[in-house]
Image 1 (cartoon, rainbow, N blue to C red):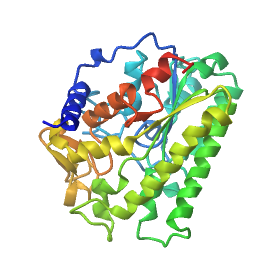
Image 2: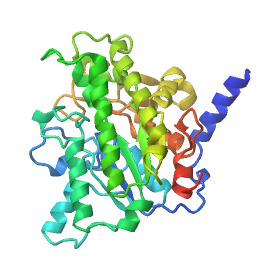
Image 3: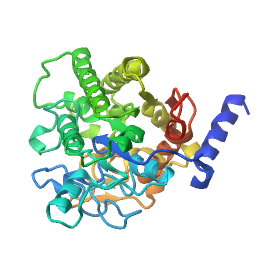
Image 4: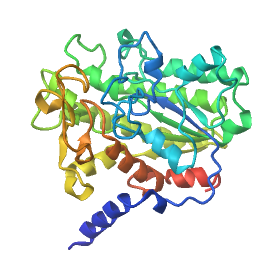
Length: 363
């Protein structure tokens, strides 16, 4: 066995180890604030009655919560697992908390953070606007309002973890057949990166100091590409992945300059593309029997129908599938990703992992 194969095997075994193995040395993170899309959405869209991008019906949530929660998977998301690694209760969706405060069932926002993410949203304002999703700009306004109204403790914010993941929907939508893009792929990606810079600027001004930016995965490999007339189904959609990789390079450049540009801030780059690509390249090492098709859906790749819609089909063992539905990973995939982000090496998250970010402000 070659040394590289041995290392891969060792890494796989570490990933599959019990969460107890992810020992943490007194993390000082009191809360998590999460912004982004369906990779993180804990149910905001469910509480937004004007939104048509929903996962609030069975069999979503069936493997862990045993009921739909509005999460676009069969259980927990990356944000949920990171909360658990930190020993925090799972963050509630902002929209749910707003409703509960307005009807008097709770008096204030919880101390463990807030989830602002909205499935279907993007970095660009127009992405899935017609579906009533909450764009990143509005998510930031929601957070800013809470800070300005002193609904959140300033000292808590400075010690909290800020998670940001967005852009997959922007890139997928670039290839939709309904209208011709007005920007070149490069200009489109640059417009996305401009918004990332604005986002970092805004959360820093509001007190964010520990920031984790997660790259896009191989968007061109999602089963929903079967919906696109020009996308291949026997392999990933290369043009889409080229855009994702270009965005990821720009995102890492942004992460690298954060400590210089924003005094007192530290940031990490979660290399989701590489983590996911390894699952696809060596599926058996990670316990996957299928890294192409959706466990739940219908049609080619299981990508022509959303999971749970009338006539859907579901696999026998979701743990063996990388994809849960036409866009999103299974809970088990998210668990493996989360472990790589929590205590992984530099090829998975850099310049250090989330456990280091959570336990020490000086590096």
